[in-house]
Length: 198
Figure (tube, helix red, strand yellow):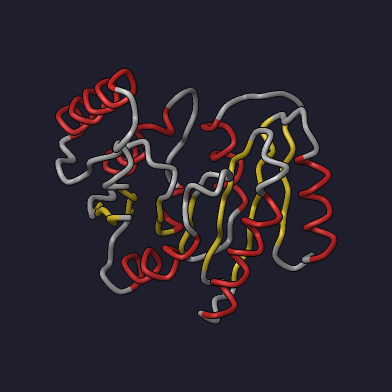
């Protein structure tokens, strides 16, 4: 299988049909074999019913994981990583802020350029954001670069990432460690880490 997509989510019932339709279009246009794991992190809306409907309509590709309560993004990613079969694993947020149109290039960077991990970087993301958000984000990323020794990543916390399957099978994501996945990957011996400008 070419690609596994892992999507952690909390109360995203409205965006899920559009997100899956978008993913499906991109996969079909590029002739990828794929699977999508929606990890429902204790949603209190109808997200799970939407996932079940998508799974009923697309039983070959849609899978759902349901948490009884909200455990957070790291456990959601960990459970998704445990089940994926694709050669390349893509993670994205469920709120339509991450574009599935980026998937083919992320896949190419892993398969052809030989990256172990590629992290997205939204160059214009901070425009319009208040300083109370942009300054802590910049400080976090500067500290993460210094501590990890991974100097070419601008946004460690971007939800849109691509991995070789070996990477996700050899890291353990827990607590708030989803913010440090590039560092976990580097420590596990996966050193070719790149960035994709979005």
